Image 1 (cartoon, one colour):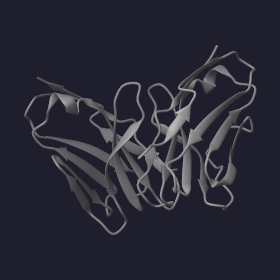
Image 2 (image 1 turned 60 degrees about the horizontal axis):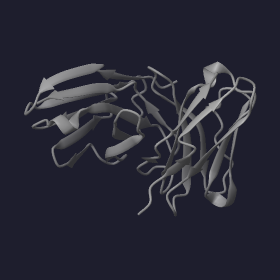
Image 3 (image 1 turned 180 degrees about the vertical axis):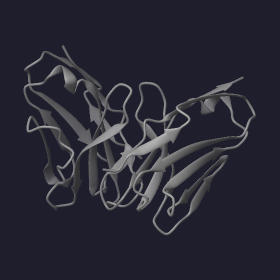
Image 4 (image 1 turned 120 degrees about the vertical axis):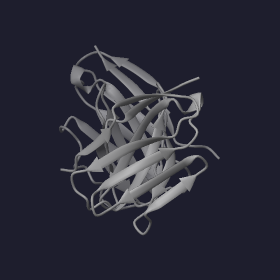
Length: 111
Length: 113
């Protein structure tokens, strides 16, 4: 069974800092990978999707990369803002069905 | 356009009762997923529907759980004889097809007393 680890579990940074969130899979045969944010009491909001033929995706201040050989992904957030405070989840798929999720990284950006 | 919607947003029930949770996917999305998020745990896959194919039920935790998807659109997750360990947030997601970006609904918070 695919196991997903997200490091760190929690992170607190001052506003303006760049930061990296990590995600790793026990089975490196990842077909696609999606990063989400989850605000308290809310559902998941999709941030970036890396599909099978891709290695990274960028959207605004966010950049996600996937190293399929090692089964690791990183989410880079540039110039963090208080509005970025949320829990960040990575979900990896091994085929055309469900994603396997980590327990998330809880990010707090301090003004 | 409208996103994935779920109802009810909150459900409190007594142990042993049956509950039904509803999901309305994004129009035109052929793939639909149910996940469960328990306190302090990651999202756990429950069931996956893709078009008219037989659903992937491999994540259902017991035979008390079932789901159907009528007309390739709305889905209902049914939990029979609820137990306290069923308390969780139940999330539904849809995607254009099985390998595309998944979009999540706001979830249904189920509390079993």
